[in-house]
Length: 185
Image 1 (cartoon, helix red, strand yellow):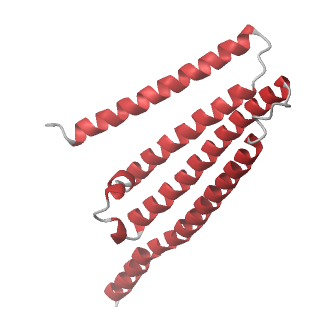
Image 2 (spheres, one colour; image 1 turned 120 degrees about the vertical axis):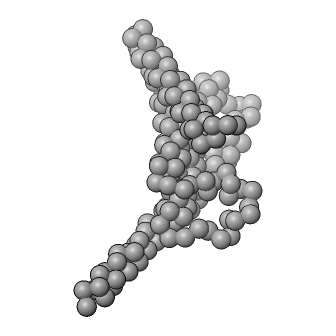
């Protein structure tokens, strides 16, 4: 009797992993929504850019349009990176907790996207996307930054240096991980 209850309980626990499907569906929906919004932003951006070549436009207005366009392009890149984050999260959670994605087997793209064998693999992939989002956000803020003192430039330089260090450490950790996986290569 106790053995039967234990088996039923373990089966319920094991099947409880399927609750992850809710987060997979929600993450995919969020990714699709963000991809859509970013694409609509690109369409509007292109529409506004048609005025850039207007010879009647004053130099100051053209400069303002140029700066706004650069800022909007950075925002669009940020949106696409966030959508990619959600997509990787959804695929990774599904593969870790539910099942391998049969459609992906044998696909060249899957070897680049779905090399997620553990929660640490998923976290590492997501951390890289988050780092890229932070870099893009810093770039966006730097474009809008009003430099009022030399200290402002020092802060900006420090932020850029910290990003460089973060990228260096990320690549170094990735290279170290590959060495420990394949020590004889």
